[in-house]
Length: 124
Image 1 (spheres, rainbow, N blue to C red):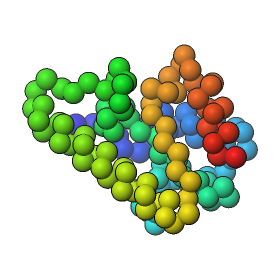
Image 2: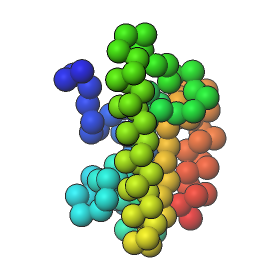
Image 3: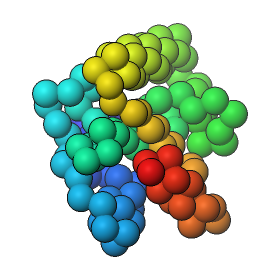
């Protein structure tokens, strides 16, 4: 578990490179904002969270499978992650930020272009 990164994951880097190539400038992991969003676009008053399907319990996703061992512990852990995500999103919305959440399965190779272009539409 200690080998799992919380920052600069492959899906995050993919989104960041795409946004930069389209002319968007951003900040990373702003500690002043609730939940330390992965990408902050101050010009558009928008924050982006790039979530792993497993860690954030992505509903109806084939990459979200509860482990067979310590099942109760994992269910509580993932539910708590979801609860924290929801609380942070509400706080950001109250502060006037637009919140966008991207799950890693949506930017896999087969639908990457569509998902990233939809991201631009959501930002603007």
